[in-house]
Amino acid sequence: MRWLKDSALERLREAADAPDLEGTRYRLVGKLGQGGMGGVFRVEDPMLGRDVALKVMNTADGREEVAARLLQEARVIARLEHPGIIPVHDAGILADGRPYYTMKLVQGKRLDEHIQDVTGLSDRLRIFLRICDAVAFAHAHGVLHRDLKPENVMVGPFGEVLVMDWGLSKLLNKAGFGASQPPGPSLADKTLPPGTGSGNVLGTPGYMSPEQASGDGMLDPRADIYSLGAMLECLLGGAEPVPRPLSAIRKKAMAQEREGRYSSVPELAADVAHLVDGLPVTAYPESPFMRAWRWIARNRTWILLLLAYMITRAVLIFFRPR
Amino acid sequence: MPDDTSIGGARQQFPLTRFSVIEGARSEHAGERQRALDVLISVYWKPVYKYIRLHWNKDNETAKDLTQDFFAWLIEKRLLDRFDPGKARLRTYLRVCVDGLVMNTDKAAQRQKRGGDAELLSLDFESAEGELAQLPIPSQDNPEESFAREFARSLFGLAVERLRKECEERGKLLHFQLLELYDIEEGGKELTYDEVARQFGIKTTDVTNYLSFSRKEFRRIVLEELQAMTANEEEFRREARTLLGVRLA
Image (cartoon, rainbow over all chains, first blue to last red; front, side, top):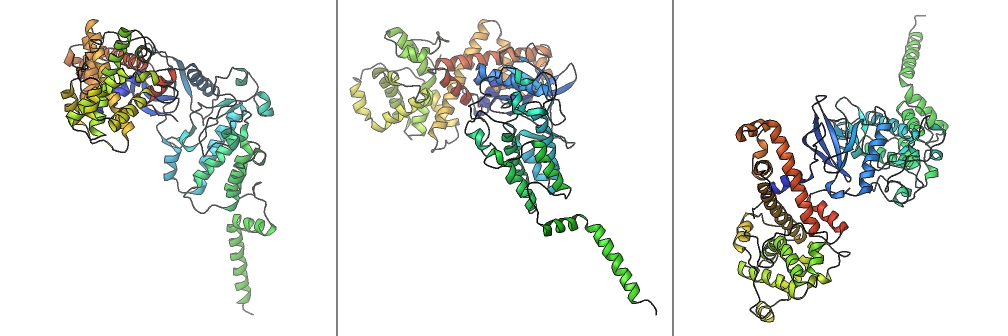
């Protein structure tokens, strides 16, 4: 029997797990990454002359429930056409029997890596607001992400922010998201694959809401709001001293009881946007003194100009020849 | 073939049916039991020998004896009958059994116990010793990991050998040679498909097609071999994740 070096073992491992693209129009370029449910490969689409990302179920996970979840993820993303959500191009079953889908190839950085290069608090908060936009859009279409974390957000070379990895997403019942659902057929009408319904503990510790961690099957958008709060906390790490209102926003988003959290992502985003604009936030009731101080801080240019004008006038009056 | 054992002859029976090795080893039918043990030994003897050499720090002669003792013990005491897939992987169970043997055995007494004239397995210890010389010094505090790596090396090695044979029989040796060039030999991946096509006198598209075929066959063989080495679907999935390097979130 042939002796295999460690490097040969690694190459054979990759070869054994590579997708069998026979019968598709794609050509394998290389592996991009590995998730719990599947591997992501860079493939060439010679028909359109571009490279795309192909996500395929792990060879080892040849279970129907995982296959159903991967295809469900593709269908969910395909329905969520939003600039903050990565677009799906194609889906199907490979010759080796594994389901796959292709999506836009994002050549950026994961948020947890990108954030090291963003030092300004307001810049970080603007990224957070873009994430909120995408998540709010998904909620409006009856989809919970359930695995929001910096590793699942990509920031492209032109500053585009994309929420990725919808593999744990859950479809809400119509009653679960109220009147914000747009017209048209609902994803909630489709059959949920096993593992994405109720009663399963899926998610990432540290970002998962307490109810999600306890396996509560009745999750609603407030579960994602908790994760957004945890992401906000991560985004604030290492930044300049955190203003108290911002800290209050994070605390409210991450309240242990969901009743204590924001009721919707737009409500959370509005508070963060108000903070960026120097406006009052609902999570942080202000005393009259603090309100006055914030008003002064917000209008300090005008106030300084007015003061300068008044001092000049006073000086002129004082030294006026009598 | 050097990795043939004297038990049950050459490995002609792969792939056996689902659960074959475990169930076969537990069979009351002597022929089936031997065939299954033959398969098990062909995959595990090198990991066991290297584990005893490196983890237990035994010299090569002692390690040879203990490897022989281990498989004799496995057969004689029908240790696989006691294997419970609900409690551990087969790989872990065998490693723990090796630990038990090395800790408790007195070599001479053990030889005496099996009668001193029990049939010895025909194992190519020289090749295993040569492989050991090429191994980096393993981490002493993680025996499970080093045992798993040697198991993967052994299983992949057998799969490569089987792929070569099957390709030869089907007149597709060139398909195998491309996999050998790209995935086994050093530096193969640096060659472009065009360069390889010129080297072998084939079209560039043939290179990708042949390579795709041999990789697909390699995956099939690895999974078949692994399936035969595991007791149930759950253990198979777990081992496949370990073997293929797939991390779980």
